[in-house]
Length: 121
Image (cartoon, rainbow, N blue to C red; front, side, top):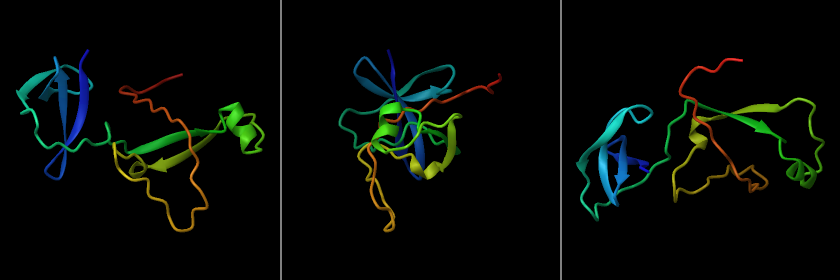
């Protein structure tokens, strides 16, 4: 199975694919048909980025019963939907930046779903 990475290149990012233990620049569409392109030399200094650059992050809150209980919150009758800006997505080894006014940071396991087609129903 291929592993796909987003790697810093210049001012932006570029996708790379790992196949057979070697890294190659990805040719084609990352969410479609692609193939390995030029091999990236072993030992190249690469900075790995967040895997995607979303335009917005849609979140569902208080959807985990035990965590809601920890926070002494009642589970809502309907999902609690809120938005976060795209800048909340960070890559590996990047620091979590908190504004001075933030009281604390909560640990939570997060899952992201990338939808490549318009959803219906």
